[in-house]
Image 1 (tube, rainbow, N blue to C red):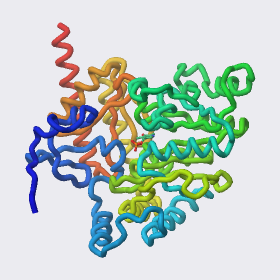
Image 2 (image 1 turned 120 degrees about the vertical axis):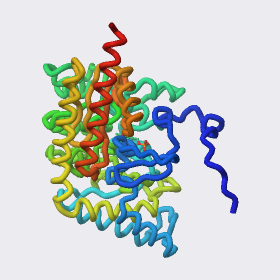
Image 3 (image 1 turned 90 degrees about the vertical axis):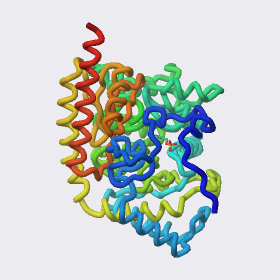
Image 4 (image 1 turned 60 degrees about the horizontal axis):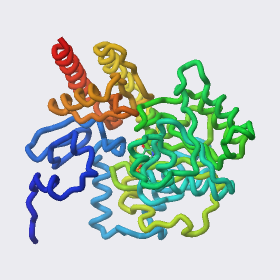
Length: 428
Ligand SMILES: *Cc1c(COP(=O)(O)O)cnc(C)c1O
């Protein structure tokens, strides 16, 4: 068989300008295990990006890898449309036993096309079908994906600008904290929905993330989430929680909302749901709203069979008891103490986020980019988020050993110290 060369000049020559992460991390990666990536030259990097939280259990988890290899070498089904398969049955049973039942959730699973955006599309379409209404309420700095329906619910103007047509059917309201600590934006939402002359049509759905992953790690308070859930109910709208990024343990528990006392009508999941970084997405829906007809929200790749294999293991290995979740609390403390030290080096810095999606707002996108670039030079992959990319964001795999976590945080601290020192000299 022919082998083509791994020529690094081919990216500039032949890959579209739409490429993005690779611009900040200019290496050619070859291998990965756990919380580390290795490039073609053998350099090692600690991964605090984790595929944007698609790799919550690290790269190439040995148990998932073994199961997947066995599945493939045994001629297990690779693609099965939405046919019943053994591996799908096993995943569904694991999800029912270890996730849904212990949380008293009666939701059904609907597999969508294998992206978060497609799960959000399905959720919004379903809410419109169920309620017969079109308007959807989403929030400032929310990110829900870049296909047209999901993009309409997304705040970011750069992404919205890519649509090329007007994005309609969504009314935006201020997220928790958007107007400062003195204004309760849930009260504003209630007022707008109760006033027939507010100009906001009765909504089919209210959709939000409990921690805004791309929008700058704004974390909604439990009270705000409960209030908005009650408002949705009172106004006949479905509550959609987009847990594509904050779910699968990222916010400290399997679902980002599970300690808040709310039961969403619909939950969207993708990113880490396969456990292994494979494409997979789903929507959880309460049975009374499970109203799509057969193939009404169709898709050739609904349910990636290889992902069912690894997704089942991720549930059985990490969520069958409390052990893993308890470890998360300890890792959260380590991250928080690192971030506290960092925030002291940057005047005006603010800590952001919840659980293990944490970061620091350093006040400017330029400074945040300079810090991430310096960290990368020293072997740490870390990205920014927020309306001006001003939040340095830690999304380390949840399985990162404490020693590696500390090592990564030390690289980050050094990067902040060196970058801010350089800027001081440059200003003098
Ligand atoms: C990443 C993300 C999406 C979109 O997922 P894709 O797989 O990139 O389409 C939707 N919602 C949230 C909260 C996300 O973080």
